[in-house]
Length: 391
Ligand SMILES: Cc1cc2nc3c(=O)[nH]c(=O)nc-3n(C[C@H](O)[C@H](O)[C@H](O)COP(=O)(O)OP(=O)(O)OC[C@H]3O[C@@H](n4cnc5c(N)ncnc54)[C@H](O)[C@@H]3O)c2cc1C
Image: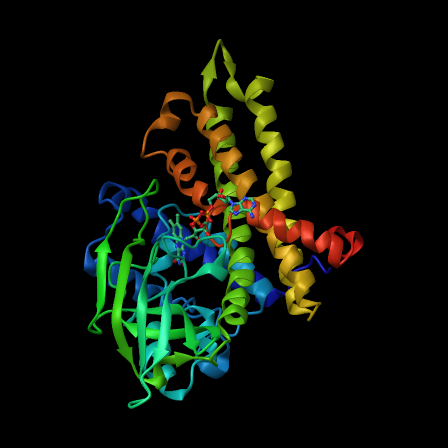
């Protein structure tokens, strides 16, 4: 792996850093105090600024209107997004990269307006009865023989998106006789039969919400099918792998900021006539987190580099799980240590360490829990060989 960044990659990283520091970080307290909400004019200003900064749609290929960043370039940017609390980076216009498989009409209706910050999508896989084990998803899509339309029935939970979200990519099982094939559909929220049943609050105060939906006889045309019948597992797994790498990168970014804040504070704070940084009880936990952060950064960049170099997809899958598992667990511990270094001030909501401690917890749950990452890694050790997973 070549660890040196090209001048273009450095420029991209610095552009993302400037956007995070100048535009997003100043909004953190307002978002926290507003329960995850910003005034709509502020949100529009952020979206416009993100488009002007060349950050919208970075993950999508140029052919479909994105910026065509390599996975390593995506990581460099997400390392910066991790430096802001409240998930504020989610205001940057974009779309789930599964939409690269959209046909021309779907691009016009969903992808292009998403990249302009005019439409907002969610990805609905999880159900009340099926989380880690997606093989047991109960949402069905049945073809109406007379019209060719699909009738979708089911319930989806944790459907993440901004308050303006207006469509979801639904994973449903197409039932044709004995055959059951997982398939994706694009469903507008205003389609008859789509009903939001709950919009719960969570541990974090995020810009995104995670509501629950019931879909009852939701009729969509065949043109709403995203990809082939039976393609959903492959398409969703493709998204999981990239998203796990992004999570690893954001967790590294969070750790970098947390450690910087802690060092700044601890080298200035005096107790018992000495800087608290000079007590090893304070500085050694930070040294441990510095080691963790460096390892998380390397693991994540390695997974990205392998993905970009066309390595065996199964090995990339295992490496993405390694990166997410390590980075998310280390980042949570780092937030806890940094909160402790701040003492009582660390427990205040205006302190980033307090917010990070609540926010980083979910990185051990979504896009596959830590236990599921361990399952993937353990299986790969046996099937791909230890040398290819850890080497
Ligand atoms: C804030 C938030 C946002 C989310 N956003 C989305 C979204 O946008 N779209 C979406 O589809 N989903 C989303 N999810 C759902 C998320 O992906 C699931 O919560 C996650 O996959 C776990 O599923 P579950 O909650 O049903 O837990 P379960 O699968 O019921 O697991 C419960 C516990 O059992 C453990 N466990 C399960 N199986 C095994 C096993 N084989 N070995 C060892 N341990 C096991 C798990 O690790 C976990 O600790 C979101 C969740 C949250 C909290």
